[in-house]
Amino acid sequence: MRIATPSKDRENTQTPQAELKLAATIVDVARELARTLPPPRGTPFFFLDSDASYDPQVLDALCERGALGKQDLALDIGSGLGGRARWLAVRAGCRVVGVDPQLPMVAAAAMLNRRARMEDQVRFQVGRAECLPWRDRVFTRVWLVDVSYDTALADTYAEALRVLRPGGHLAMQCPLSSYVRPDALLDALRGVGFVDVEAYEGIFSDLPQACRSARDRLRVALQFKLHEAAVWERLEKREHGHVRLVVYARRPA
Image (cartoon, rainbow, N blue to C red; front, side, top):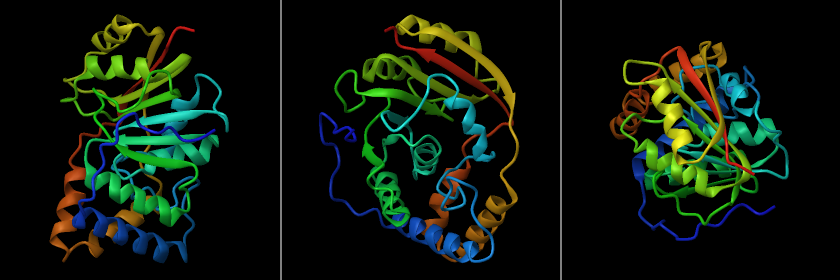
């Protein structure tokens, strides 16, 4: 199965220097640490290519509904530096497309992809969650993980339904806080046409020691690189709670 080609090409040729330098620093830190400490499975860069503050095995829960395999094509909305998309590709063996609204992040994610030698399995594209640049019924799975609360969720749900194939699954995860009303989220999913909507709360474990060590090393490496450090600090400012809501839904067959 070929990785999906967007219906409209929204990329351009600008060079996002700070993000690319951050990606290069991540590669250097991961390579150095890997000499003495192997990275957890599916995280060739020790999960430095993700702003998640939890163990990547938490993402296993998002694979529980509907079997995933080599024949599947998954969409990761809000893919950032691409760590989650690469993890899913390794874990499930499927092909993954990551979409992010920021060209600098997409360029950095693609650079990390090349270093991980995963270009044949994972791809990244510029696009907005509420207006995805693909035709209808392309993907067998859509992931919406750690979504920002300022995202237009109703539009995002409608777009996720549109690009899913009949019978395809949506898996969503978000930290629980005063901003999150679980009933409202589930009603919104049903309102755009999803069925078999269900959710549960989970308490998620911290990053493995290897990933925590990598983050400490990255902070030191970025100490005198002001532009790259600013990008990393912006990534880490996203809200992370240990209690999270995991949501499953399905497009009718």
